[in-house]
Length: 222
Ligand SMILES: *Cc1c(COP(=O)(O)O)cnc(C)c1O
Image (cartoon, rainbow, N blue to C red; front, side, top):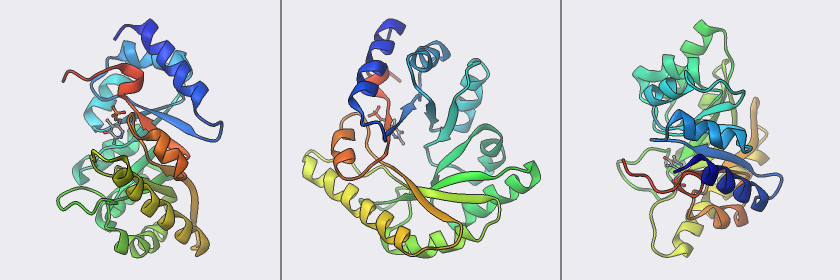
């Protein structure tokens, strides 16, 4: 998409979002030029699904923004992810958290993380099952280099918006429940949910971070 249109889309979405909602520009498959256009129009957080792609684009983007990992993180990419990202939104197992923690130790870095919830309970999808969330939060909270800052969910494709809403409601309930438990070193600050076709519903259900790609950059062709 041309950079003028991207700038218009970014400004429109930012104008529409309540001021407490943070926009993550989901930038998979976009060129550095497109990402820069979004940043110059007001994007403060850029999200990537793959470590390699983030590294390539980041090398060409000399702007001061935050970089979030929003895709499933493979354990063997944890080291590179620690170098590249300011937040990892997709922690869903204690093993992955331990890998990230170890590389943070070596790098002398504290990593803010979100716990990814498999709110649609789809087998073979990433995210922790809702009923296992509290236990995972307690385990990750003990890792010295990680700081749990909230929850993230994808939900699932649903033709009926009410189905999407139920995934967001469930995740918000977990968010509130964990927040009430006063677990040491856990701060339920960010609830990351909602994409181009669902962010309005997500905000109604309590999201304060939305991850938007298509509505900023146009349709994806690869
Ligand atoms: C691609 C993606 C988004 C944004 O999806 P759009 O429908 O393009 O807005 C949000 N979150 C994740 C994890 C993604 O991979």
